[in-house]
Length: 238
Length: 268
Image (tube, rainbow over all chains, first blue to last red):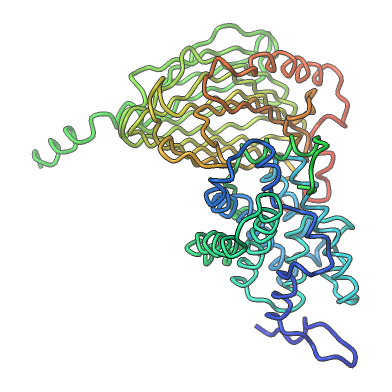
């Protein structure tokens, strides 16, 4: 695949490598507002989940919500790269597939909140990107990840791992604030939950059509998210 | 040859009764709707019909769901018609591998209401459910789906249950639940053995905080708990049914699917 024609035009700058951009996007220091989110962890704890089962919670978050997002990001990237977006329907179909798999309005709003922050930053970095330009002001987070990945020529598997890692790392960072413990335990939890989806990575990375985005659901997490959205006592937005 | 036939008869005793799908169709008629009923493992029975609607009851024609059973139900609701389905009894998935597949297509402005009774996955059962609803423009569905892991006091088996509702502009609800009584998953079902849902698609029913309000017209009310009788969703059915029927009386395009879908319609 010829990637040269979709690399960003950085005038007077060296073009960043796709891997560098992936690290940047996974970095908690990225000024896109990710620190305000707990990836469903605070909703779970407020909803009564015991901190003792957080490892199971993260692994299931990885195989449900996080894989829906990862698949959505991959479908978005291909929609941009394969020219679907030029015909004006590609990203709308991907967004529709994502929203059909995200029945909780609270979860959709959280994702769009994250997407808005990420998109604001992406527009500064890649002002001439057609894929980034095609998005509305508050697209779901995985759509923004997908257009950035298309812009920088990121590999599909790297994109899947980025989407999952970023989501779970937010949850673990929130856990350390809400239920303080040895930060090294948090690192172990994060690596274990990321590793749990490795068998699915090639399948998710091979997605082209939005119809193939996985749809495993987490009804209890959806209920927690809806309750969390209307509670006053919370540190995180979702 | 005789041996081969014997093997087929002795190893697949239940395949014949469950091989043919049950079929229910409702189409516009002159004085009353035309209703087509074909019995498979599930036997449909006409309760009543009038100029635009039919009510059909579903009962098991045999003991269900045993190891190897594959139940299929195909539903067709013609343009402008209403089909209301009632289950006569719940369904029990006994130990073994079984499947339950529903495919429904609802024509323009059609309505399908299916008040399902509990689907119980016993210990040692591995049940796969697939429910697919394809809605034409202005069509709507109201469904009740109650999944129960295990009979009373029993650790339930494994369920893989998918629900897909597609409108003329694309998917509206796509979800798949994987759960097992032996491995309660925090965030999926937690320690709950009952997941009860009322699913309304194609219109906006009256919702309260906690209901899942879909992006496209539609909503899901859900109860997670230990006992079916603790679910408050019985009380949801009537107002959501009333809301659906009143959409038919006042065709406000804002309530119908297809209005937001115009830009995506041409890709299908």
